[in-house]
Length: 243
Image 1 (cartoon, rainbow, N blue to C red):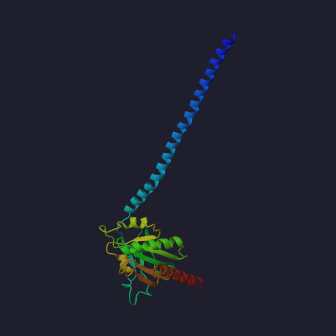
Image 2 (tube, rainbow, N blue to C red):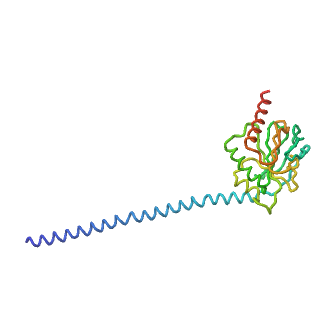
């Protein structure tokens, strides 16, 4: 076999190997692109789930709030507290708070019995009241930073509901504010509010474990005063329990 023939065959073999190598390089470059696209689609899908899931939860929460009754029956056992505007002598101090029974935002029937061994702070709010809209976030922040003492409850009364005014329905408003305390739904004539002697919003009534009114406040209560009132109730409860 001549040298020229070998040289031609070697050149053809070299060309064939170069072609195969080029094809192989092309395949290895294309394969990652496919998986990059797949990965991008998967990430996009996960991102879509992450974005839509909170919206779904918010929609569900809103639907649940819309299902809460605007008004509900309230029964009162005991004498109503006298009204007090926030100035002058409060004749309710030292009096027995009446027992309240009604429906909560969870649509369960609850009773807050006077003198049942639990001290309570009643917070009466109206969804349209600008002072309530300022006070509630402060109380929410306080609740996040402080645990309610043992044997002390915070009870909310939602009253004076008006569909034509801001922040209706009240359940949605309080849910948006992340309010976590029990809420009593007042009736159309404000029976629960009247029982506590409410005159203005917000209105706070502090009652010891015997059901005796210790303090009331009409309007936006400074958070340091609220904190002091809660601690006074807790101290009173501890002293009574120790005796």
